[in-house]
Amino acid sequence: MQRVTSAIAGIAVSFLFTMNNSVFAQAAWVHLDSNNNLVYSNDDLGNHIPDFSYAGYESGGVALPTNVVVQQTVSPSGGDDTTNIQNAINAVEALPPDGNGVRGAVLLD
Image (cartoon, rainbow, N blue to C red):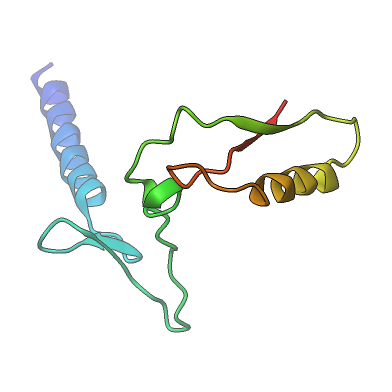
């Protein structure tokens, strides 16, 4: 019984050392710098993982406005609605902006 317990303990310790190295190892493509900021590395051809952290409304740092007036509604036609959606966007774009610089929203119904 003691032999089995020792074997299990040895396997567990080996597993922990293996897991520790693989879980906390820095990746080649993305790693943390000394300030804990992500750094994106390039390969030999200059390829890298795109940083989408600034994507979105106001670079993702501002909540979406909640009081925007719906100016156009597009309902599904059962076919390709690309033209209908683009026409609605164009119609709202042509409106004058309000005091907050917002023209309105296109609602996809």
